[in-house]
Length: 399
Image 1 (tube, rainbow, N blue to C red):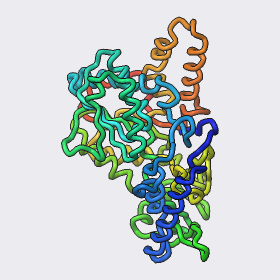
Image 2 (spheres, one colour):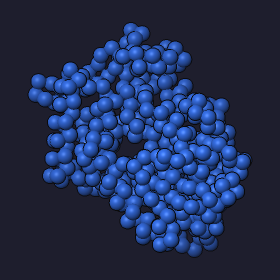
Image 3 (cartoon, rainbow, N blue to C red):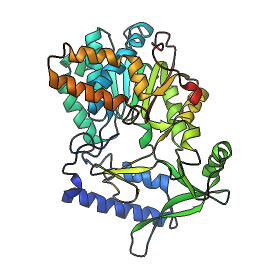
Image 4 (tube, rainbow, N blue to C red):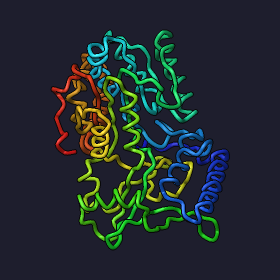
């Protein structure tokens, strides 16, 4: 994600301040219930998802102009157009035009709209488009956007779900900037041992970070990481995402045939847990600013940490999914057809403003100094003989 241009934020709204105060009180109660210590993973879960109070479910404006960050689909329709073009052979040939599209966390709905419009342009059939969305306000925003850009027949085939359907699907799964929002354990390495970072309260009730010796469920995986990628310096701070493997396993169980495309910022394990990355990757986004203090604005600030793509690939392998592709976002998009979509969009180049906007979007999406290298793309699947992998650099050896 990228911070958008500054504008007014809901933190100036009395309703938002009230929500923040209620969430802070909820967190103080959780600390007390935990004997004075709340593991950071539980703090992050509450700060983002506590019913009616967490950042993603309290109605705060999040995406695009006036929000806290901008995602690739918000930058340009070229992102969704390229994904749809690349995935079209799977829907058309592997699934005989009877596939389901399922998107996790659809943001403003722009990616869904761009994908469906491109499939319409390509003449590729699909049965339904399911969106799993936990945020009530984003769900409403998605519905309004898609109703305005889709045909009535297309919109009638879009449905919103609270969780994965009970019956496995045959189709395409999209997860753009989803895993980074799964809560993380925050840990510190001291004297060759793992310490769990959590939240406690000061005498005045304010929240502050604290540490305790890590329980086995955290100490064991982190000790393995230290053995593989250390030695780490004293005080090394980083994250471990306990829900990631379960998320991939649920994805595998829910995908009978097809491909899942996961796009997020992150690294292979060797880069993620390198000794020089001793401050970890956890950050907040608040009022278009990156915030280093994760306790700064609970409920009004996004919290996010990079994705361990080696862990994603390992979990997929255990769950029976093939790792079909892995590459940086820039090289992936260029190999998946972005140049052709760019040419189709700007046409003859007579509209200089349109051409300039599209060119700027391409730079943002693909250049290493922008989103092109920081963001990674992994494709997982089964039974996809027609996925066009020829143009995508094969970086799976880095995982």
